[in-house]
Every structure is written in structure tokens, then in C-alpha cells.
Image (cartoon, rainbow, N blue to C red; front, side, top):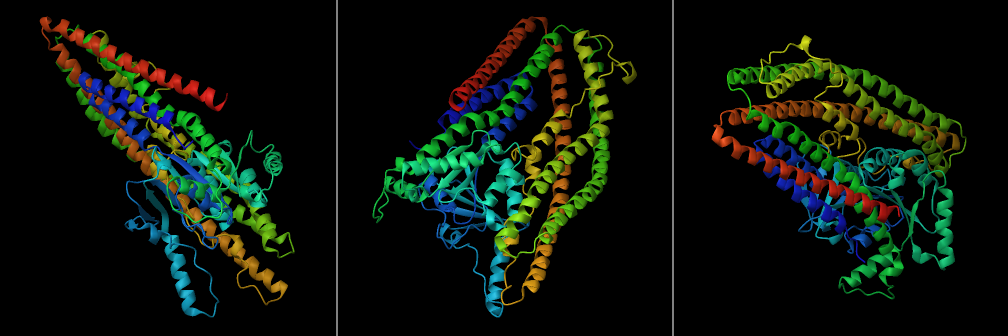
Length: 640
């Protein structure tokens, strides 16, 4: 059975169909601003791809495994070739690779698949080879300038909105592992940790699972042990799976463990797809373990993760329907009964207040922006101090040991730093969220109060038609009234959902995207032929320099990240104000239009209103049934 997300596709099509109807109803009612909101929800869901991140140490057959899923040899999978850049494999009508660069001013570059396969880690050269060293440095600099490569290919696996993220190896250093755990995996729907069935769960793999992954991400991990073909008997296969399960007790509840042969799976798929290959012996695709893994992956995506993806836009749409029935439909009914004398003057008064509200909100935003910039300095001081502590912890761990074994030092320093870096990331996100919310709440009090005054006047106008002049002091206190709740909700998901408005601003500002020799595993270069003490001194110096470089990169990325948050808040703030003013203006126009109707037209208008309300309720019911169907499928297919 091939990989399929048909149930999710059906749910998505159902949502798109119902919201298309809803947009037409909103325009018919006379509130195109709400139709535009629904359009943004549709776009958010349509663009929200399933991100599958594949991670693993060098030599785990990562590229071969991805090729087996795709059913075609797209990524280079030679033992001598390693993934040097972050690769995004997506569906495209034609074969091409788009390189996107760290420098946002550098235009993207479209290259062929053959050219892409030549972008590999260069081999190190002897120090005395000056020309070779120059070429090596140029190759490294070019690779490090690439943010990621988007590999587009007409492949069925990715057709229904699946994106595979192929990452540099876990051996590529502390910085790579940190970014995987704090940036890439949190924004992924699934993280596949590729192991080797011959010796599963190395020290770095255990550290990644135990000390680096955020607590919200651990249950989305699939553990895939490659090289099933190297295991002789079914009993040996069971022992490998049981070994992995036992070692993950207390780390992952009910781990998802699979045994596959990526090499045999790719060969079987290529033969099934009609390719002519010269092979000594091929095995049926079912015996490779790949289909079993794919089925479990598809179920997890289209039932559990799909529910997470659809919940936000579906519930926002349902809330919008409720608001429309409560506001526009009731406004339309009541406006037919309003006393027309003095109505125009009262509407003009509210229109004037809307103009004043817009001007004052811009002043409040300026104040908020200024305070957020001041907070940047405070946050930067705190973050830099914490980074120094982590560097000191790494150096302290090095100084505790007298050995100079590469593997041991790498593991000990990584184990000491990993939980500290994970905790710092969690604290960073929490501090950014709380600081931003506090500044917005404080700076928008007058804006909220002015909007409450406008809303109260408008509602009183609809309720009674009496004189609606109300002062702030005469209004009841409503401490929880905040028109910027959506911004707070955006802040809550910005670091885990790249399609959110703030997520789009935050994503892509991370540090250490692609490094050929970024971590402490490269410290032993050129340390041969000298005394042990000299080796240790040089090694310590190299470690210190590397950790200092990482510290500076992180501090720089933190500043960019905060500035991206501020920019996103400013954009969302203006958008919120603009939408609210626009919706209120449309409600006033609707009120004016209905109030001007002759008595002979009222009955027809009431019939129109009833039909509009009926249409809204039908769409609301269909969307609620969609949510129920997804809940039932989730319980049956995933949990039951």
C-alpha cells in the first residue's frame, strides 16, 4: 500500500468548500472584511504543509532512506557524500532545485538536480597546500551561505502537501543539534530519528532524545532503525526493537519503533516504478519494512497532526460565524425597526469616532514600539549572560577530564551543555512572549477603552435608538476587554507554527543554519605530531573559540528574532485596527441602508435576512460535523 493522506485531503476539501460558500454569504450580507478573514484562514491551511524532518548521524543511510520514501534516487547517497545543507523536498511539476541564501539580499538561484548533487562537503586538505586550502575555504563559505535548498520534484509522496526536511548529520556539532531541537523539529509535524539496527542508540542519539528535544516534541518522534537487511533472523529483529524500547523507558511513552532496509526499499520501489536495474537479488517491498512505516506515518499525519492543523482555522471560522449571527444579522433586523429621526447624526458621530480611534491607535502603536525596543536591551543583557554560563559549563566539563579522546570529550561536553541549551531556549521563548504581551497590554489600554466606547454607543443605538452619547466614566468596567487577543494567540504559536502571522516573521532568523565543521568534533584537526600537553592546550583553545563563535552567533540571532517579533506585532496591530474599523464601518453602512427602506420593502428584506441566517447556520453545522468526524477518526485510527 502506497503512502496516502486521502482522509486529510477529504477534510481539507470539505473545509475549503464550506468556507467558499461562507465567503459568498458574507459578501451578500455586506461584510467583505469578514470574507477576507475567511480567505486568510483558507490560505493558512492550504499553505500549512506537513513537515517531516529526518535526522540522524552520518552513516545512518539518511539520504538512501529519503530516496526510498520518494521511490526514486533524488538525493546523493554515496558513503563519501554527506548532507551539507538543509534540504526541503517538495512537490513540483518539474524537476528543479531552488537555493535560498542566508543573506536576504542575495536572490534565489535555480539549478538542476545534477548541479545540486554536486554540492557536497569538500575534503579537507593539508595545510601546506595553499591553493587547495583556498579552494576548500571557498567551497565551505559558499555552502554556509545557503540557508536551504528547496528540491522540487513531481513525486507522489509529496503531492498532498508533504515536505521532507533533510538535515545535516547529528555529528555535525553542538550548534547543529541545538538548532534541530529548538527550531526545526518544533515546527515539524514528525521527526524521524534514523538509527542503525547494527548498533542502535548511540550516546549522541540518546542525548538528543533525553536532553535536547523539547517536551512537546518528544511524542512526534518516529524511531527508524535502518539496515534491517544486516539482521539475520526474526528473533534478532525483535531483540533490536526491544533493546530500543527498553533504553527509552522514561523518555518516550509508547515509542514508535520501526525496522527498515532503505537500500532494499529503494530498489524495490524503483523496480515497481518500471526502472531497469541490474541487481543480484531483490526482495518484495513488503519485506523491507518501508510500507509498514509509511502506513503508520500516514495515519499519524492525517488523523493526529491533521486535527492539530485544522483546529485553529476551523474554530476561528466557527467563531466568526457566531459573531456574524450575533452582530450583523441582529443589526440587520433591528435596523428595520429603528427610529429614523436623528439616526444619521448618530451614525456620523460614530464614524467620526472611528477616524479618531484609528489616529489614536497609531499613537499607541508608536508608544508600544518604543517600549519594545527598550525591552530589547534588557532581554539582550539577560540572554548574553545566560550564554556565557553555558559556555563556562562546557569549558568546565572539558577541564574536569585529563584524557584527549575525541569521542569521549565530544560526548561529555555535549551532555553537559545540551540540557542547559534546551532550558535556555524554553526560557527565551517564554520571556519574549510574556514581555511582548505585557507591553501590548499596557500600551493598548486607551485604544481598548476607546473601542469599548464606540462599541457601547453602537450597541445602544441598535438596542433602543435613543441618544447614545456615552462617556468613558459612565461605562461599566470591563477589565478583560481586549481587541488584541488574536495577537496574544499568535505569540503563543509563533515558535511552533511557521504559517502563523508572527511565525512567518520569526522563522528563518535562526543561527548556524549550515555548517561544514561547526562543532567540537572537528577540533582534532592538525593535532598530530605534538606532545599531549600541547594537544590539550590547542584543543582547549579550539573548543573555547568554537563556543565563543556559537555564543556570538546566538546573541546575534536573538536580536534578529526579537526584532522580527516586534515587526510582526506592529504589522498585526495595524491589521487588527484596520479590520475592526472596516467591519464597524460596514455595519454602519448596513444600518443606514436598512433604515432607509420603505415599509413595503421591509418584509422582503426580513426574508433575505432569514435566508442569510439559515445559510450561516447550515455552514456552521457542516463545519461542526467536520470537527466531529475528525475527532472520531482520530480516536479510532490513532488511539484505538
